[in-house]
Length: 95
Image 1 (cartoon, rainbow, N blue to C red):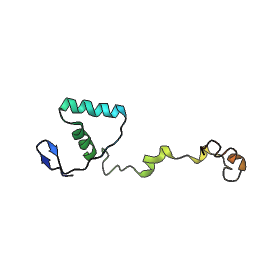
Image 2: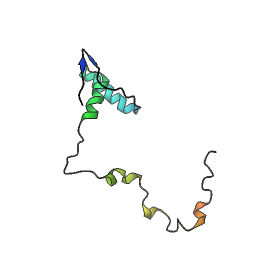
Image 3: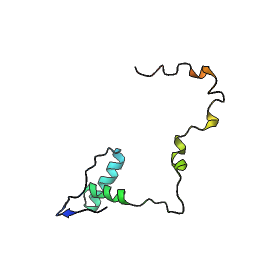
């Protein structure tokens, strides 16, 4: 990523607004204050920084998503055939 500087302003970049948790904001703000640089500089550095994992230890998509997947052993064995599991399905959905 190449930045064009004009004095103290970066002019050849796009602006992106994001919402972040307060803890992350406080971490970025304190790092910026300690180094006497703008918060945007800290964010740019963190976005450009290469991942900590090396090429030899690639993390698979499954490893990154495993906590989001429902494991089959936690579901009823007759989930697709027993209509009792559909009782009250969609009742609490706002209309």
